[in-house]
Amino acid sequence: KNEVEQSPQNLTAQEGEFITINCSYSVGISALHWLQQHPGGGIVSLFMLSSGKKKHGRLIATINIQEKHSSLHITASHPRDSAVYICAVNFGNEKLTFGTGTRLTIIP
Amino acid sequence: DAGVTQSPTHLIKTRGQHVTLRCSPISGHKSVSWYQQVLGQGPQFIFQYYEKEERGRGNFPDRFSARQFPNYSSELNVNALLLGDSALYLCASSLTGTGGIYEQYFGPGTRLTVT
Image (cartoon, rainbow over the protein chains, first blue to last red):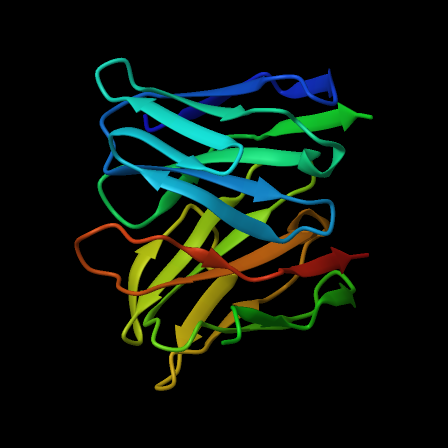
């Protein structure tokens, strides 16, 4: 069964802390996406990756294909980073299978 | 350039009614996918359309249907609404729908409440 699991479900941290959100999946994938969803509901694509590592500003995404695992890191976290972060994967086609999300709250 | 747009933004319907949700993709994008997100859960895939043809269907009953128009916009229709259909319905567009994996761009969603 094609499954995506995220951890933790909820994460609260102080401003400035280094944040790590984890995603694991059950079988081989074509690509993995990290998405950000704010309380209004809209989803923004942060990264799409199939190998290695990508960096954009304070955000870093890594993927280990052999271990079927990806991490999203946020450096120098800020209250505006508070959102739900969702991992989603393509199991060989364009259909996205989503994790349940990690609710991140950054306290000033 | 405009992003993915969806209408309406909010909708309240009664059980048994029918609803039509609309999505306009980013200009140049030919693939549209629909997702349902129930409160507190991750989105679930409903349909993908590419070049007006259905390319994928998730595990949803036949009450759910969709179509894509020549201008690549799309409609999601839900008949005989149930309370459990209350959710945020998200539309996403991408450049292509065959082979290759492309980034999907999401619209703001339509929040449907069934009473």
